[in-house]
Image: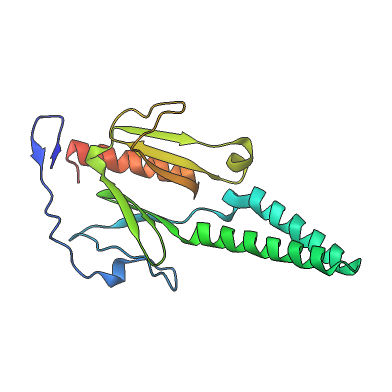
Length: 191
């Protein structure tokens, strides 16, 4: 249940889930799906961008290059170690990107994480109190950033927060504007 500004309450019937496979992700092979509520519409379905791990990719590429050069120089141990290190880093990048999915619906914001064991974190649009976007010069130039929402004002610094963070989301400004628009409509009752 959520409190609207005019003092009235909005109740949700979470037991109202239905099989809406036609509304689920259009990405082929998507295994991480959620049950949508009756009439709920997915507005954003995204994963972190590959650019989010560019530093890791450079490190893995350098390790692989060192491995190839080591093999060419006749040092099998250095070559195998470099190539294996590069492959492990590439696997890590693939795993980290493909285990997270961000959904913004007309009612909720959902972060889905995991392959076999799956964790979902969500918040209702009406309950969002704070929204923060952040990006670096590198990520801004490539169109990705982080969108963080919370039930209270998001603290700065090293303090822990219970905020939902969409890290490395492509088109972060559009995602933030979508959340703001839907939040405004839901709180105003214009849905």
